[in-house]
Image (cartoon, rainbow, N blue to C red; front, side, top):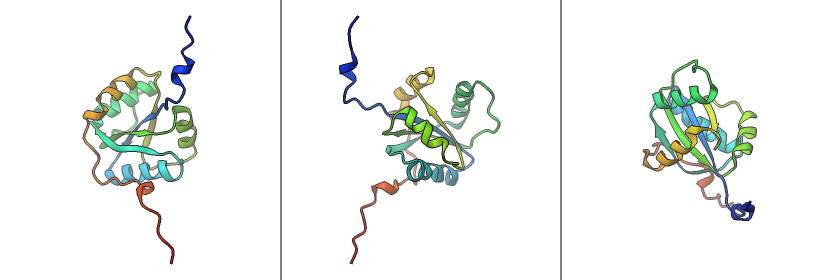
Length: 136
């Protein structure tokens, strides 16, 4: 048996988050809530995923039919690991359905592989990207 633990030193595992919403406004507010109130750092830009596909993925992960269909859905990567992401998101009440997808789900690998091929969500600007205001 080989000890591979040293290979993972310094490797940052990022969480993948699926957000399903009724409209773009709720979607953008949810992303802002994830950054501001859950304290997670979104990396890159959210990517639009087909809402029917997002509903299907949510159903598989939750192991039940989703109660409401989404009109818009995105995938978001955050710098934090899956466990921290889940714990922090449970503390907030965003206006859209948020699912943290861990590596243990079969859908994770497929979503990771297709992530870069998805279109960017227009209208998203991280509040953490803004330069600090200078005081006079």
